[in-house]
Length: 375
Ligand SMILES: Cc1cc2nc3c(=O)[nH]c(=O)nc-3n(C[C@H](O)[C@H](O)[C@H](O)COP(=O)(O)OP(=O)(O)OC[C@H]3O[C@@H](n4cnc5c(N)ncnc54)[C@H](O)[C@@H]3O)c2cc1C
Image (cartoon, rainbow, N blue to C red):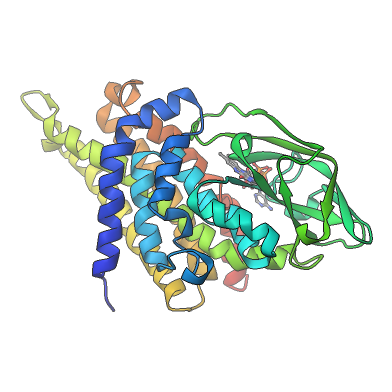
């Protein structure tokens, strides 16, 4: 087994590391405080070809491996989880179904999205349908040459700035989910106000309603009733990506805590010399190292075309729980400074809660891991 990164992977890590140090970290607190989509930085991430990393070159992407993609995601999340959440959404969920099923007309949106010039949102969740996607009520009425879409979605990442949506709905002739492409400028598409939230506040989210929206035939992505099957194609990758987001924010909290433990002096010595603080740093290191290594294991299964359904869930569940545990321990090491708004640790702590929800809650992942075990 090879546990080293190759030259290309190291170059990608360094590129994103330097970008985050120079361009993201200085603005990360401001992104959180303003609660606005960080458009300028989003476009700069587009200039780094991030949005096309996981798409093949013939589709306009750079076709890099999952390990490289995770290295970039970790770096972005280390700087700002708000920015990283918006960018990862654009690079996978918001564009994947367009890539797989879009015709020439729709591919125009895909091409622009890879450059960050058009922004996409994914609409699955509804007020009464979160983990249980089968209870989605958004309905598409089927006509000979078009569809009429009605329904209400919520928690749609990037919705206030989105040019198009990928919408999960049921058709009136099928009880399983279908997927529709919906440009945001169409009559009947209404984006609600930004949902004010605890963390990832620069990754704006809102409700989106569809009121008699007329969609042409080519807006059906895939076959009627095939939505859940299509979603499964990308779910493992989404979970591995969310594990990378988790490792990123955990790394930021861990680095701040160790630095603080070395420099904060109490009772005549750096607090890291006290066993209680040293053990917390060691516990953080153990969790971070194991989450990080398991993440790359799951990513390398993808790159080697090996089954990774269970492993992607293990990676996401473990890394997101570790991120929250590490942020909590780091906050204890910094004590009052971890509580102060002017230090980023409180932001990491708030942002990390999102990772327990997006990509499947820990409870849902636990249930599905159990199923993989034959239980
Ligand atoms: C910041 C943010 C961004 C988001 N972005 C998007 C987006 O872009 N697009 C989108 O469609 N959605 C998005 N979501 C929504 C997200 O996907 C849902 O919140 C998630 O699926 C969970 O649904 P829920 O919040 O309705 O919780 P529920 O499903 O209502 O769950 C509530 C609690 O019950 C537990 N639970 C539910 N069912 C079971 C069960 N069978 N067994 C055991 N426990 C169970 C859950 O684990 C959880 O603890 C976003 C959410 C957040 C917070």
